[in-house]
Length: 213
Image (cartoon, rainbow, N blue to C red):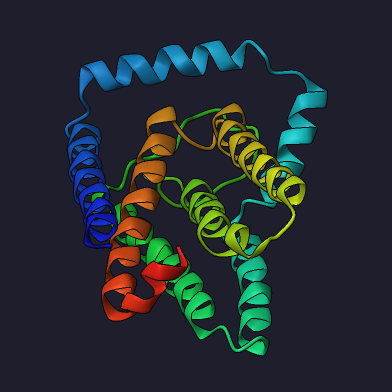
């Protein structure tokens, strides 16, 4: 049991260090990072066409903070109705905390968004708000919802759809030139590390949950 808790803690610490390292690279405008971002953007830009742009513009909406928080709120109400306060509070703290951390990072680093965007966006670029919210929501689905599903087939379908949706969301943000690839990577790392640390805290406060995992 303690080993399982320690894995969450270790994941959170490693992720936090990786995020800090990436954030520093972004802040000092590392030439290597700029080069990697440029090459990936150039590669993805070669795929741009009106049909894909319309598709990714629409699908990107489902990864917006408003949409993700709305979805999470519905799930929280459902869990509360089922007297599952652990799941409701965990989901709420994870998303609100993750969005807050992303906002703070944006304001500290203040990285401008890419030019020639295909969609209207405001605010700073690093890390991606769409990506961190979507990442946290998908992780929550795996931690909270998947274990409650009895049908193995339904579990597999839910897992597959969640992963596919996340991949499309994070790809769409680079395709639409709303973010640099490193913004997405930063959001993924921050989301995973934040949930890992939060899960460690929840398991410490609720040791009986370990037997349910």
